[in-house]
Image 1 (tube, rainbow, N blue to C red):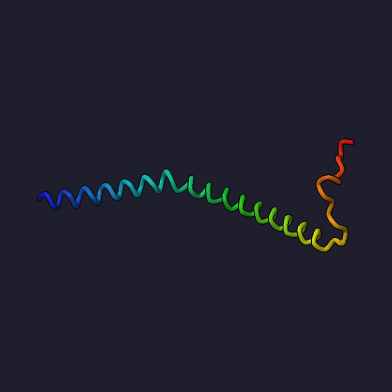
Image 2: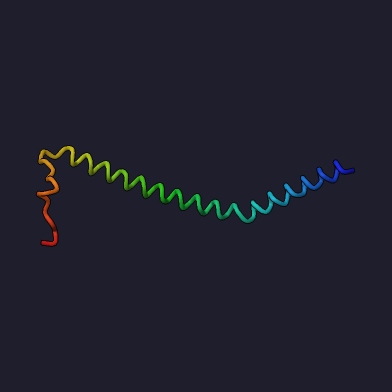
Length: 75
């Protein structure tokens, strides 16, 4: 009798936990996944811009100014 009750409890608890997670957590996970996908797209766009800028700098024949010779845009 004890074994059967334990099996019933395990099954009932599993079903309850599964239903609880499916109804309460899945919508939140889907929303977070969409947010992460949007952030990844933004990161990829930014990385592409950075890589393009780095390539432009490497193609330039003009040497980059040193820190001491840089100009200030406020003056």
